Image 1 (cartoon, rainbow, N blue to C red):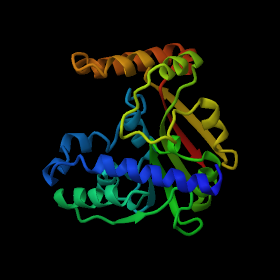
Image 2: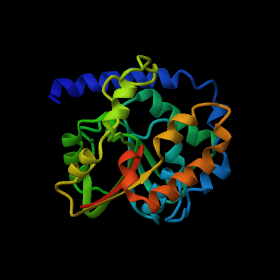
Image 3: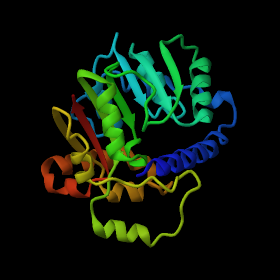
Length: 262
């Protein structure tokens, strides 16, 4: 993308985020379910759930500075703060940042969190100032080359970046999706599922890279139906087992969790 495209992306994201923020009915809906917070405190390595696995990779962050790269409405901000991190919560949307602040307030959290309205393409933090970059579903909105430079720049030597991203490698699945004209109003025109190649090319300046696949497309498609949603946990576990036994299926996975080390 050119600089002009970055500005277009940012404006599209601000507009998308304003739509999302407008659907927060009142502050009471920002109260976190404690069981849904503590499940991320020490999840196992073999979890079937990508967000739990992201937190498994994160590990002990007490006393560490974590850049939450695209904090959105603050759900993960709460968990990161509860884990004892010093959190730099970055998002392009002032509306979502405001909701994230309110989320900490209604959950009565006195945490070391700094909210920053700013661009993921030009992170307003000094060089080598954070220990971990934690980005949940953010890269697929971005210019990957520019993002990689910024993430590498702000990480300290030996620091880690953890990303949880939607992927779509199958050309057939891409074609089927292109036949569906509907686009949800909370989807910006610049976001798109990534490919494994894009994710493996991202860390060219990093010392190491690893990734793990989650969720097969059948689960992703079927669980949008309310009648099937109660089986989502079982289906996710089945997918995890299938991916472990048949690694070739990872080409069709819909989520990748990656870890980079500077």
